[in-house]
Amino acid sequence: MPINTLSKFGVPVEQAQGGTKVGILQPKPKHRFRVLVTNFGPRNAQYELTRQTQSISRPSIEYPPVEVHSYNSRAYYAGKHSWNEVQLTVRDDISNRVTRLVGFQIQKQLNHFEQTGYPAGSNYKFSTRIQILDGGNSKMLEEWFLEGCFLSRVEYDTMEYSSSEPTMITMTIRYDNAQYWGEDGFEVLMPNAPLNFNDQLIGIETTPLNPRTSNLV
Image 1 (spheres, one colour):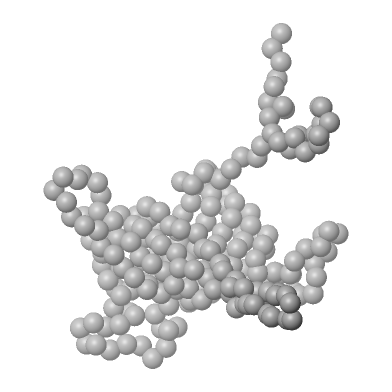
Image 2 (cartoon, one colour):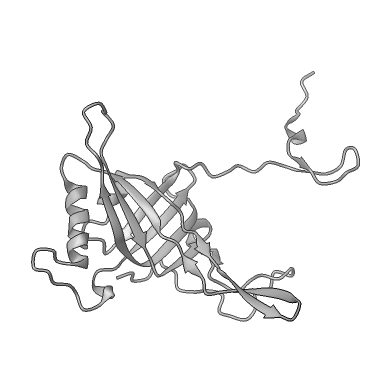
């Protein structure tokens, strides 16, 4: 008689034989995502990058340690944080739509023909949303919302006679702040007040502005 052994998979958390095991959870596959930008280049072309996206890195954050000396010992506290840049790679299509779109954004940051620029960053900055999907057409598992974005580096791919691979455009995106949202954009994971062991929110407002429904421009 067949016996189901899947319940035996996982990591044991008790030393005794037959102890409790923590089962395996489904990981998020890397290919189930989409990228949405707002105010990138012309306002009416926000989905051109979405359909040509090849890859994007997720945000990372650093807290440099600050050293405090005291007699025979040292202590540390977390210094001012820094969000690291993300890289977005898109396919360069034969209609030149992506090339024109990227060029439009570059010109917004600085008009290289006239050598003129806008008076403030808000005139050319855009927002970026990195959404992890469940494999269907609607459900979203998580979302990174990047605010105050601009292109700090743009690399156009190398041409090569021996290669048939598609040409790419790689953009490095610098941003001011990042928010991390949970399932379907309703569960606020960061920034928000931390949760204690009684699942009660501490201190601050529990429902920050939802970037999926508010004005992003």
